[in-house]
Image 1 (tube, helix red, strand yellow):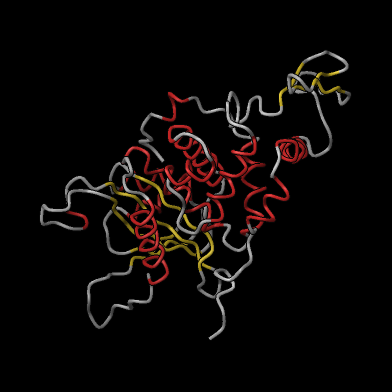
Image 2 (cartoon, one colour; image 1 turned 60 degrees about the horizontal axis):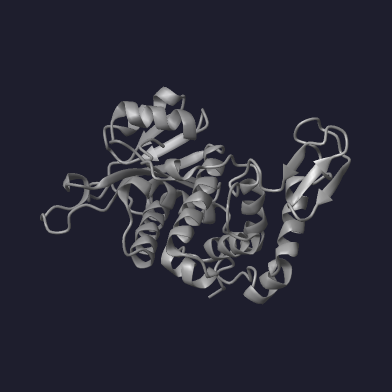
Amino acid sequence: MAKNKIQFQKGLSLPRFLSQYGTEEQCREALFKMRWPQGFQCPKCGHTGYCEIRDRKVYQCHKCHFQASLIQGTIFAATKLPLTAWLLGIYLITQSKDGISSLHLARTVGISANAALRMKHKLQQVMKDRDDLQPLSGLLLMDDAYWGGKKRDGKRGRGASGKMPFVAALSLSDKGHPLFLKLSHLSGFTLNEISSWATKHIHPGSLVISDGLNCFPGVTQAQCEHEPVITTKGPEYDGKVFEWLNTVIGNVKSAMHGTYHALSNKHLPRYLAEFCYRFNRRFQMHAMIDRLAYVALRTQPVPQRLLKLAEVRW
């Protein structure tokens, strides 16, 4: 049997990572090039001439004398952690298939548990914001899924109490192989909710294949085609239609159950987004570190009070 190219890709080893980002100066140099690929440009006047004030870690414009920080206006803004801790956190979160808990992150990076939790949630928000900009297109599989809920009430699936509903959508290649994934928490599986979600996350003209749940025809209101497949066990049912999507949903639940001892329902959208971000870039693990750092430098700061808020919408 041929080796799975995704599972056996080299990625970026820890020694190699430390050789590139092991010191604060290396991290600053790398982030400088990511933030200003064409060289420094003053955020206020656009002038390119500058001098570095090393003791304050700022860059002063020669023309207007505006002092710009490397992390000002980014997800790293106002952090008390060294850049080496942030880059190591990015490395650990992106290179782990099933993710990493905040406690494990804290022990490995050498920071407090609260600092690790803030770091993780901020990076998850970067991942979510980035993937939200890219709607799915082409041939899609869509299904309903649930997270959490009471374990001893005797109910499972759609009728169980306390469960968090989320929609799973997977785009396929011409050969039927999975391409891109979206997992989004919904307030419920209603026609209007699916229609609003599809308008934002699915490109018009896409073909959506779903089971017979009554809410999924809502994608037609987003200018998408819809093809229902009845999933009752009978001679007409082809169990392979949703095989890839069911596998992905199972992997998501297994990963989160195995990695996190406790997961607050209000933060579920961020954890789903983290899984999607890695899945959607699974062919280039080695490049994921620089790509996430690059996007983090272009993401607006997220204050602690906003991190604590529940994300009730997708």
